[in-house]
Image (cartoon, rainbow, N blue to C red):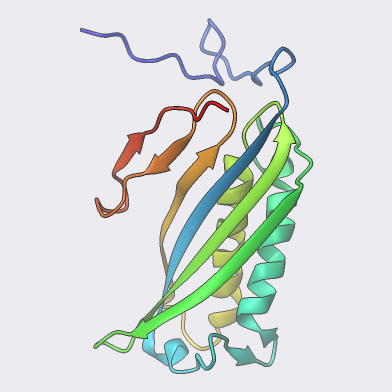
Length: 182
């Protein structure tokens, strides 16, 4: 039987530790993350033109700004993350069609990019998460029935290997993809 893999954030005595990236090469890294938020009928009915206007302001636009701010502060939120200078962070929010039960799924895509010695996955995931939490915060006046039902990495490039979630195999299915050599 194969032993379980050693987690990168544990030392040989199983104590939490920051990964030493000093010897790694700086490479161009990109990560794409997604969050799916289900809006209950009371809030879904307010979606017009891929936005919701409220007394607090436009929900989707505010969530985009919050997501970018969250991505930039990832190392302050996740204890063992290295602080990374982001070259770019883009968030796109799309409302899907209204379901028969009156709900609407909103998909948040976060793309984070850097040139660094370590990956930018956590920044993309944090950006998508903070945007989803902002939708909840701004929409809860209409309904507390908002559900953040999925947050996941879709793809990452750069470093030792590239990775992409398997297409069409469900939200948790993944497959490895070999590095692209240039």
